[in-house]
Length: 146
Image 1 (cartoon, rainbow, N blue to C red):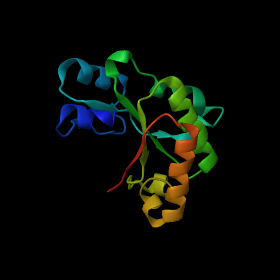
Image 2 (cartoon, rainbow, N blue to C red):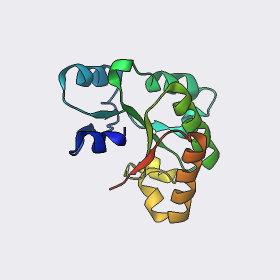
Image 3 (cartoon, rainbow, N blue to C red):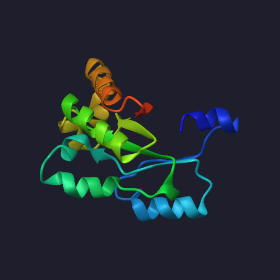
Image 4 (cartoon, rainbow, N blue to C red):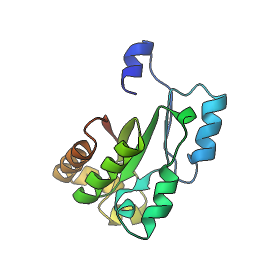
């Protein structure tokens, strides 16, 4: 999806990842009625994806249709192994990119050392990016921050 910027010769129009908003029906509506060049899913916990109970529900939230392409998976976590495994899953599912959330100010997310807490841990942030890149070597990895 990064190549679109060069291909189009203009800035790309994206739909921001929004919790409880950018779910599959919303993304499908965007694909049908909007001019967005790229859409993001709702942010998903990489740690939750690695949890035996939460995994099934979260994988359902990651599902998408071909009409939604290009689509980027936004993940959050502070756990390197979980990020690696989640990125690997996203690549296997056919995502077009991975975006790491380093901007969410929610207290519950920040308590986990994830989201906005990552900007206070530059070494951890670099390691988390590397874990995502190793888990999904064929996908571009970006970060979202505020």
